[in-house]
Length: 344
Ligand SMILES: NC(=O)c1ccc[n+]([C@@H]2O[C@H](COP(=O)([O-])OP(=O)(O)OC[C@H]3O[C@@H](n4cnc5c(N)ncnc54)[C@H](OP(=O)(O)O)[C@@H]3O)[C@@H](O)[C@H]2O)c1
Image (tube, rainbow, N blue to C red; front, side, top):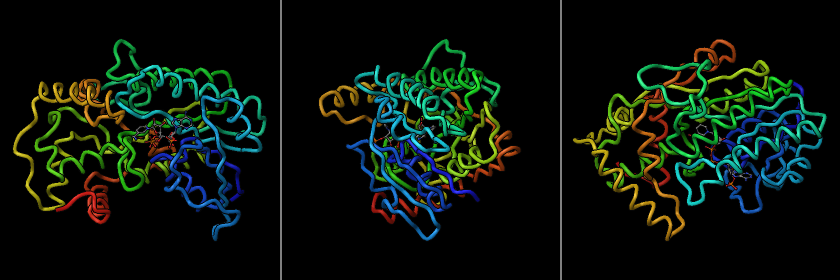
């Protein structure tokens, strides 16, 4: 295997840090793009020679700061662009477009200026394709753009169009669309399943959220990382690949968790109007504390829809093999227990 110089944006994040570790372990030179304020504890320590032959350096910047990005791209063969604001609500919603769309535009511009980059793997999201109420969607779905449940969804849909337009203009970009990413690793707010399980097992979420028909697609973080690396190695330029997993409701997630831990299932569903009320209260509190709430009105809007996808194309073309929720949660729950986050 030829050692590549690879820039990973969002390297301090939940997905990006796992991706950096895997690329490093595969013997590549990883340039982990982080901010001066980033918590880099989930990354391997910078080194100029690991046992795999991999090397890792921290490069500092911000995706909204073009000069820092273009400097980081210098000498790179591949960019994984995974940096984004991944929240269902923020006090300043304009940040979503600034970072999630503006950051991608800067990456595309930096590609043109750098001249050494052979491939960009852009981390999109199932949200960029839009809801799938009553059916299972594939890569042919284009976001209808009529409504967006969250500003995050809107920013990922706008960025998706920017990425597809770039592909039509000949930029060597491959688009990856993870589902709800779960599994061990950094517990940022983007690690929704870990956060929900912590609430559930600490008694703060006594009932089910959403209904049995409202499905999401759950992708294990290690499967998503492998899917990204396959997208670098085998992904066809300009193509979209859904890196999703088992389509299931949050009720099923809680039921599987109860089965694995041999604990009681919730006995009732939390009515939507209570979640909406709780969401508004949480947002009011967040405006005072500055802490992003677990539940917000946009998040409640989102869970009222279905987000179910097929990853058959990634299976066929990338060799993507998503594990089942039962398999994934059988690893997540003991990990949360051993870290002291939950008890059962
Ligand atoms: N988590 C999911 O369920 C999920 C599902 C589908 C798609 N995705 C996509 O996967 C990608 C990674 O998400 P994640 O789950 O790893 O989220 P995350 O844990 O919140 O990580 C986001 C990363 O982006 C970085 N970032 C944010 N703003 C930045 C800026 N202005 N300049 C440079 N870096 C910035 C963060 O840096 P700091 O550490 O400094 O904050 C962090 O490293 C995103 O593109 C997201 O849309 C995630």
